[in-house]
Image 1 (cartoon, one colour):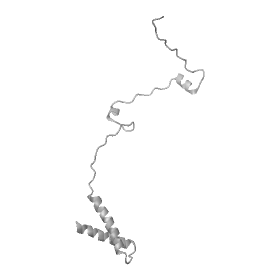
Image 2: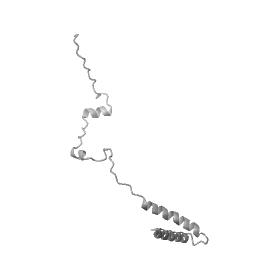
Image 3: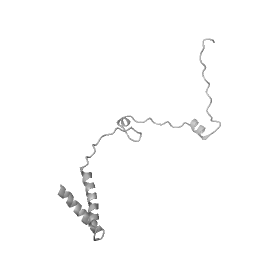
Image 4: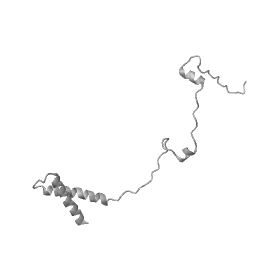
Length: 108
């Protein structure tokens, strides 16, 4: 394992040296940079992967559920002629006021 890591560091240092145009006197810098990169990769590979857990999420209208598929939605009512004219703002078609009910009392 250690030899494999050292080989990876050596290859990465050589790659860095080539990418920078074969400069002289910077081998220690290339080696340090390659070591840091390869060790980060090794640590990431060795880190335990998180377990997959299922999360319970809230049901939304966008997400169909089993119950929603079984029971269809209620149909929306169409507007009646009276409601359409009231919506348009005709004064004549204004809805009538309703009379309020009085409570029955024993005094009457």
